[in-house]
Length: 318
Ligand code: PEP
Ligand code: MG
Image 1 (cartoon, rainbow, N blue to C red):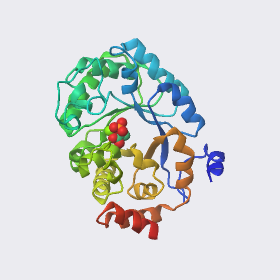
Image 2 (tube, rainbow, N blue to C red):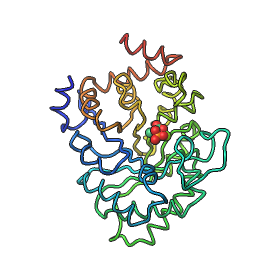
Image 3 (tube, rainbow, N blue to C red):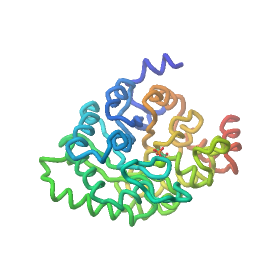
Image 4 (cartoon, helix red, strand yellow):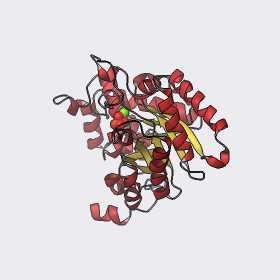
């Protein structure tokens, strides 16, 4: 199976009956973009830029960041890059950006909340992303957004940058979107969808916050299953809100490479799956095994269950 998947890795990603689903790569390092393309990636669906920040003793300056992002963009040769702005705090502390002690770091200053406490760092990052290329598709994604106010705070900076940087000096095919990884943002997806360009569902954090299970907990993390019907309902709401507004939805958490979950996500209407580069041939091969109408039935079946075990049993019995 693996050998067959590898042989067909450059074919477009679609279901057996031709329903297109983009398959992109999750990267922590821009130097790995070329490898992702070699494995059949149709783009980068999640560039975790925090690793670039962690690799330096202080926040990397504009020129350093432009060089880094350009490396990924060049390797992608016209395929889209979805770059996530700095997502530290919580489980990912940054030594030169100390956060006062918190009893619950996962509920504290992390993601976009933390970034907005030092908007100059965020502004430099947005500027670098915009200036890294002029003619390649760029998607900028904000982590841990809980409602439209946080998006608007960043959008104000972004809009100002678009007027400050001459169009000849920056990306013009650019979108600004948010991750859906806090239940409030899924519940409020209609209000977000009216203003953002796209959503990408971070099922790792969305599951953690929906089920109140620490994603890294040594005993409990195994039961933090993204195929929980509560999580699936949030994804359903997210997709419905996005598509009503003509926006696209990706999934970039671990669930996107789960062979059992893939038909459910596709049946829910997800437009893009972003997975680790190594999984790309297998995810593409998995898509070719089922029809879209059948995936929609799987999604409805999953939504009607009461627990994640029931979802997995019901899907297996099908
Ligand atoms: C997620 O939360 O699902 C996600 C993709 O982001 P990260 O794993 O980097 O928190
Ligand atoms: Mg996350």
